[in-house]
Amino acid sequence: MEMTTLSSAPAVGATPESLSQQAHRRLIGVLGLLLPVFIYVVAGLLPTVGLNRWKVLNSVSSYYYTGAVSVFVGVLFALALFLLTYPGYRDVAADRIVGRVGGLAAIAVTVFPTSAPDGLSAPSWWRPSMAVIHYVSAVVLFVAFILFAIWLFRKSSIPRRRDRPREKRRRDDICLACGIVMIVAVLWAASAMFTHAPIFLPESIAIIAFAVSWLTKGEARKPVMQMVRRIQQRMRFSGR
Image (tube, rainbow, N blue to C red):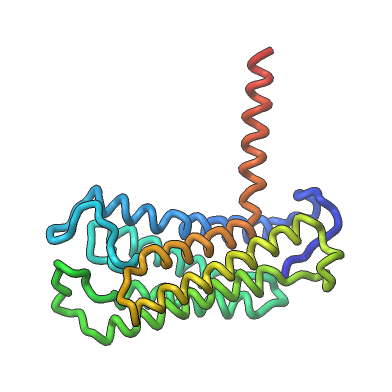
């Protein structure tokens, strides 16, 4: 639940705890935003024998078997750590419950990899049951992302939407849109069970939508705008 006031000054009422939470959300958002592009680039820079160097693989999870494995595993474990330690609001236990469930799911996605892409052999320790656990965990992880976006991030101490500050309503709308995009993207990816089509694109769309919702909740625009203002002030000062 977001504790909102009618004041538009971001610094008023800010506490070390609230600022820490905002930084926490921004870090989670940045990790998600970078993941799809970063694994593709690193996999291309560190090519894997048996795979076309710059060809997009069928899924994000397939990059476990490429030169981007350290990025894939590292980002997911970092994401899991942030979710497991996400404090949320003191009076909203669902924040912590959904965060912990999502964090555990992110760890399971990493520990139990999907099947190897065409052209590569699975490791000797891999079992088909691991792919099942991987898929179930991925669904649970995205469900957690969706719950944050369409439910938890849009809660407020002000019951009626029209009474909330315009900035809060704007963030709520963005989070809702991100949640809807994630639902559509996850259903699109799930359809691959019947169509056998690649799911890298719908997975990436869902991950980016998740990232945008966390960056929006973390009000990531504010520090960016503050930095732009400081740069403009320095440019005006140096031009005198």
